[in-house]
Length: 368
Image (cartoon, rainbow, N blue to C red; front, side, top):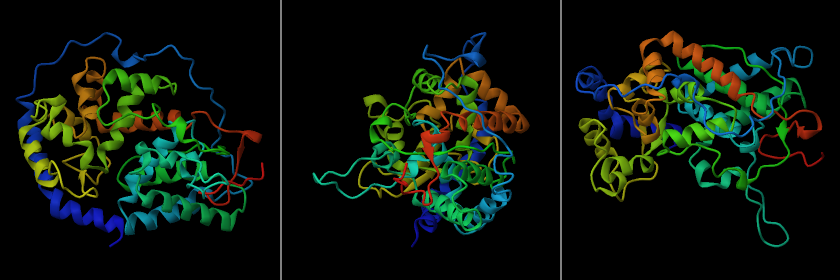
């Protein structure tokens, strides 16, 4: 069984009970806690005093003369992959985020581990790190296929970093989200260093302080944090990331008291405290897990957030009003998401001799 079909099998057999939790959204709202005090400048909150990463110009028409059909070339691949492997959609979105947050949007996450060197030690790349080990292979395969299609039409022209950005956009639209124009002109990184990963990515149990600090380091603010977290309206998380919340919250040997009790019960049926399959996954969005919409934010209001880092966005006074605003209006969410994706996609772009254009996304050129 291929991993994508395996995910769908697990969803239907082990996780389907979670979907009944969608009926809890309406009933839970009546029981939710009273609103927390709201800071006046919540939407503008950005922690940290580090200077924002340098940004370089990108352009919508970057390939207008060299590969004018690149958007359609990539779209043909993503449409076929989405039809046959729907799990590839949220996987590519996550891959794009993990790439951009570590040394910028430069396809460094795509570099595969290499053979051992003369000393018997293989250089560690970003994919070797614990934070990236659960990135689904479907995402890497999709980018490789789209890159191969671009190479067949425009050899040596389109970077893997741009292919990844385009594929992420395509999957958002294919899942029911907005279509948006993607600026292009990124180059691929000449290195992929495992040591750059730690501390660059949010964790499943990150506090809002930690999340804001990570985002500030990328030149992004609280509004970007909340909007980009909306990507969790589709996709799945491995059980390991929720075990603490449903069995032993902060060492209490009890579930998180702020998670709806019926959701805890449903999650426990799919995620045993020990001995469960490491491949079992549960949906981020328990009401519409395959639809790119704004239900994610309504779930947070109803205490149905899967990860601690998700639920924290509703519990914290600085981000709660942003969650409420996007929960109330899907159009506003789409607009905010597109704007934040554009900003994220511009982090530390490699230009000129600082980058390369790989022929195969998992392998460096080694010629620069």
